[in-house]
Length: 158
Image 1 (cartoon, rainbow, N blue to C red):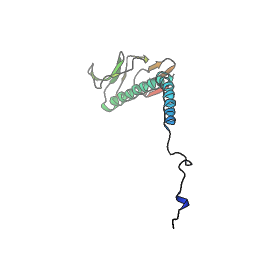
Image 2 (cartoon, helix red, strand yellow; image 1 turned 90 degrees about the vertical axis):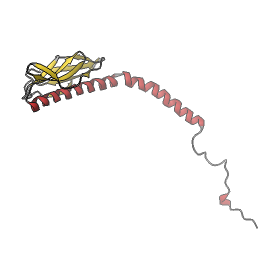
Image 3 (cartoon, helix red, strand yellow; image 1 turned 180 degrees about the vertical axis):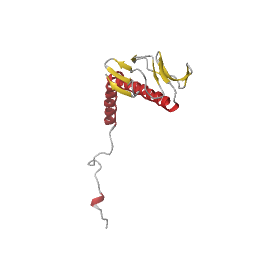
Image 4 (cartoon, helix red, strand yellow; image 1 turned 45 degrees about the vertical axis):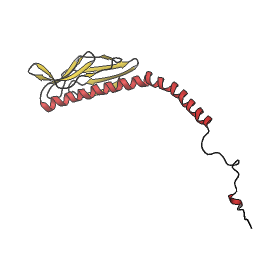
């Protein structure tokens, strides 16, 4: 006698397929490609990219202004941050001659920078004169302002 277990007999045609078909995969790749072609240019050339570029530049200059102030206070000497064109560096007063104490840093060519060529911090941390360094690309604008009496640096939009 032969017994057939009915629970083990299956119809392969009635089972749903496992995985994705080649057409479904190709369609997904095409849709992702179209979305990437539309989104990437907007992110890299639009206001989002400009805002990021201007903000990071202004933030870096503000951080370097704060570092210059800390060096003046810590070492009880005059220090200055000075721009030369699109580059800037930190200098220490050496009896009237200024010695460079940092590497040159460059501001991206696409960013318009306005403001003074330099700011000097005294050993008390004060700058003596209020200074504002402005950075912008079109409507995206940030500034790093140095408060005269305290030498504190404020980063803000304008």
